[in-house]
Length: 364
Image (tube, rainbow, N blue to C red; front, side, top):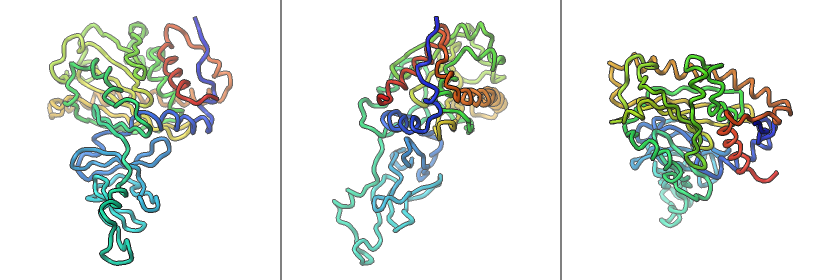
């Protein structure tokens, strides 16, 4: 049984489509926006762009918050590169904000050296807050009207991984990949288990790919699980790594691969966690921010070789996908690619992702 692709070729190549989905998908729901380790210390700030809008992530004394990255006076861009500071100062007219976004300084507000706004006006000129959440080492933001909290958004994954202590996650390494492909192709490739024995034969045979079970945990959480039948913990890392807490044997032998729609790609095993956060730049350009986490007890020197071996394997697999994604993108220049066929056994999860995209878009 086959079926036609749910998205036309221009959904991957057209500038207008890209702009529309930035508003409809990235501007209206919870989206991956960064990593907690990007802001390790109080005062760390990092500018990001979501749905074309400049935002800034800030670690204050009460944790990480997100704000619109513009001064409340004339809309000057406040931060243009990651840095550390005690307060955020606008270079244009010297207005300054605390790490909590509060307005702290307005030089020559009324023409006098010591003049300033009253308390009510000062409160009105707080940096505009963007809803944000931190979970499993990641930062998520929401630019639209919130219909459900991020805790509700991620609840199905939290239940699936209840046996794992995600508070024990320790960051090993993050690498950036510039990919000459549409962000949707990156997601579809991640959810495509059919290609594994052909592009990544080192990770398993065709029989292993056949054993991946498609899973829809929630409307916006889709992927698959694979039960190895044995722990296999030493296969990638050389020396077995500690698990994320007291993990039952069944979980120790399982691999979970999920897309938290739209742009967080998650690969969980009992002893390591991989994330690919996607930053769409253009219809044919996506930045992958790929991070590896292990249990905090695996960060000692005795596990250094194991961590290094594991990192080389998982980043190496991703490097194999980069030219594949480029060829998929070039194929989308053909209108025939939009009439591509989806095969029932392999493409149900990919079709589910395409349906999520299509349903989120305004009627064409």
